[in-house]
Image (cartoon, rainbow, N blue to C red; front, side, top):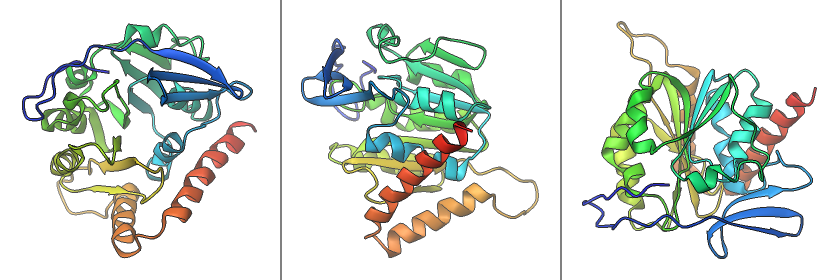
Length: 266
């Protein structure tokens, strides 16, 4: 969440909305606006990823299967944080969350306590990001408020700071709403910041568009592209040539999550 004002967007600061919890049909839901689900937890299986966009974001493991440090922008109900904490046990996880009210609900959503490898920081991600230079293997940007994605988290400056926060060959994963009036401008800024090393799996999560942006490793002399770089290029090409792959892409997200859960249960 953020209250930063972006003159380019014309959006005024949004007063933080108090998060509201509701229980229905065996699920605990976090909302800022009634009826608009921010996060959801299966009470019988708290670490399960209920929402399609969260499963889609976990496709980052196709690009970066063994991240050492994952940074997340936005805690919400902690779905991604919990999943990564349990099923990527070798990863250190840092979560940036602006709302103290959201952080106060972490126990309701079974978010792990802070430890040597898991930490929730009460901070404005747009201001904190420059402090993370060169430290993250994966950066998950999912910081929404009651009005949607705050302008500060879709600005050129923020994306440039995100690129600098990543290690060489690091990956940013951004969640955007396709109906956001500034979607096109934000995607353009993201592509500029990452020299167009950007792709997405088409139709994988409905109105949630999940974009993957790679910071290529710099090399003093020419060398073969990394596995992640080759995959970004292939996904971008497939999306352009075969836009009707949505059902297969959704199955891919389910497969990625199921595979991690099976591996973690051994």
